[in-house]
Image (cartoon, rainbow, N blue to C red):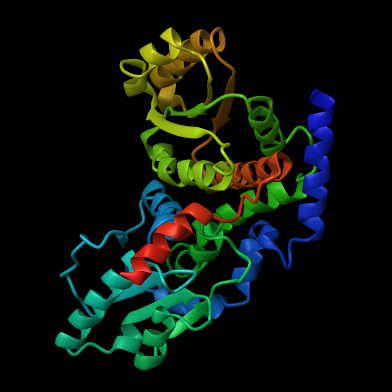
Length: 351
């Protein structure tokens, strides 16, 4: 059984590498696709970033900004109000389809504010969207706004390293360099059975009969990525009456709350522990290992240790992206679409 799983993983990874240019597997080379448009990074220098987007168009980049202490305001819900307009602001609007209800609602309010204050809109706004007919692109053309083309085959929730490339190159090139090093390490070992993404994929496939996957973060900083990772798992693998329910928890807090339920009712549950290696986490590491030991007696577990460096963080996120996509393919589903979410969007657009 284990060898059959590994054989399937190797086969899908081989296909992914061979077809990474013109298919949804292009997320594997997202940073290389971004390099073609790196001229836009100049627009971010000495600017205050106001990021407008939702879901995959925001959660991953927001986590990267907060993890590395970068300044940036993120507007993600129609209820988010922004009133601190400055000449240094650059409104970075991200929507693959150009039809995202929440993003458009926020963007239209921003445009009204910019017009009211007589700001130069083309110098204040940059968008990332497919260059197709859409409400967002209509506004881009109307106001003469620059748009970075969103690759047609790139799935929104797998786009973190594409859409984040431009602001990071302009604002924090050293951090971006470290992130790209991590991506390169994963790509170099993409078919290596000892790699993190291979192990993660194997772990997921071995637990397809389970329902709930607990993501146990033993660092508040890495916990910033919880929303992005849970979306990756839920939206990519939740198809055809299958998929896992991801539950992201902060380790020490989790041990005094939900852990009781997991240990008392372990049926259909499994867990991944993310534990930092730095010495300052000594007490948390002790807690994590104790919890992991008890959990491993009740449910399947996996332990991922890492260092809080750009290269390590990008390796974790990239490995998760690859493992979830490969797992979906082996399950016989399309990990890159979101048909049920589209139904909600269709209703919104018709009302």
